[in-house]
Length: 304
Length: 330
Image 1 (cartoon, rainbow over the protein chains, first blue to last red):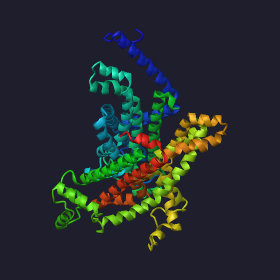
Image 2 (cartoon, each protein chain N blue to C red):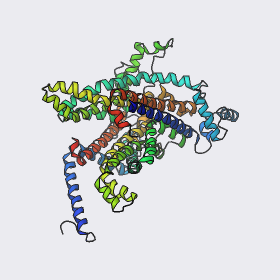
Image 3 (tube, each protein chain N blue to C red):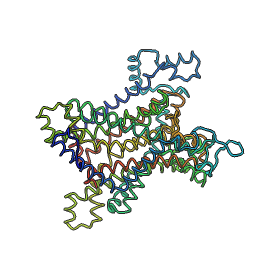
Image 4 (spheres, rainbow over the protein chains, first blue to last red):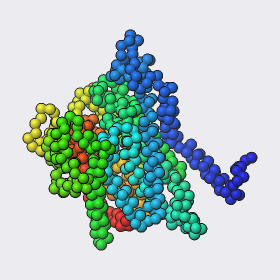
């Protein structure tokens, strides 16, 4: 049967669902036409693949000592068929570290992004919907958060609560939701004047229902645009903290790899160890930025 | 006029509230620690008596609210405590380091905000052409590349391979300071500063460039510029004289934010280049658990961000009448 099969839906709901489907198809077409966004999605997908299947792809454990055929520890080997990305000063395989390192970046990106979407959207919706004193107080909190520099904050929190990827994520999210809250609030302010909100209110919908059933779905594109941008920013922040030696020490990360190159003084000799992690961070972050722009372009074609 | 002064008063109030809030957050961050503060704050190298003496000296044995009042009193008097590491008063130490950080962040941000708008205007002129597409991409890459990585690559190329520039530090080891001006006005200083300033500059270039590009593309469709076109002005003069001028105003606000970001990023950049600034001091303090210095460095960076934002808000009121109209609706 063509179209919508679910017989538990009313006729009008089926028509509505049909509209959504054709709109989604239209957006899909526009997204497919956006080559940069498509490429970005491909790169993120590839990184997810690396991260998920790391144990099967990586030839060695990230902190395993590897040996030359003659039995000596393979320290600072240049890239060769045996070690395609060379080895580091401790005799660890750079390729394996690079593959495992993708896990931390993605974990940080997705967890921070989703948390920022959740916190920022709720604060923004509440602030923009209720206006008045609630809005005043919440937006002053956001203003104050803008005065807190993220790197120093994460550094201090990691110093006290121990360096782990979870501590870093929580510390980052506690400030990064500020922009999301501001954006969602200002959209909510203008949306609440729209007829559909007034109609819902007149029909007796509760505040909660109006905010989360009527308003929130309209704001999803904005959440995704800012959310993907935050994901890129979070990757950068975490890498910086790892580079300072206070990030995820329990897992190999690209930032930690660069910390090791730097602290061991290997940047003078081992280019094969310095280039891949930094380049990967850059490419992944740019991908998230382009994905964000792609979402902006498909949901709001006037942007161009 | 009344509007202007209300706006300024509002901003002033916000600045005071922000300063107070940040100071309080820092107080709580540094004292509400998991477990026994003494073990976290004080290095295990100290003996038991030294530890108790240190805790007493910093008032850490008293209840929290008394500590908080003492902390605020000390802050107002400019007393930020004594460093655990070197025993000297923290405030002059941090101010001195802040000066070193300003000496690289300010030139970098100024450069980015003078060169960026030109690049952005050119991108807008050739909008959606290859120069705009690849140029915008490159500027984004410069923003997305971690500064510790680009810094390391710069050191790899210019210090180790070409041997043109020093690996790090602000002055050569043989240098002994005689005057404050002598610290910065020297060829030796410039040679040390060139890499960190360039890395900072490239990192901060994207914002002014993209803001001007996007604003100008928006403005190019505005009635004001349509009018100028109808007056028969050449397009080049429309872009650079009329569109750019209008697009520039918001940049003043962003330049202050950029200095703030650069200060936040100084922890990472100064660590790569061993630049003796406030960020490097903070990192060292965190590693050594020298919490008076870490706390003061954190406070310094936050205060700079807050005060700069206030100053820029005030400047904007006087040059851009649009600001008050948006700002008044709290």
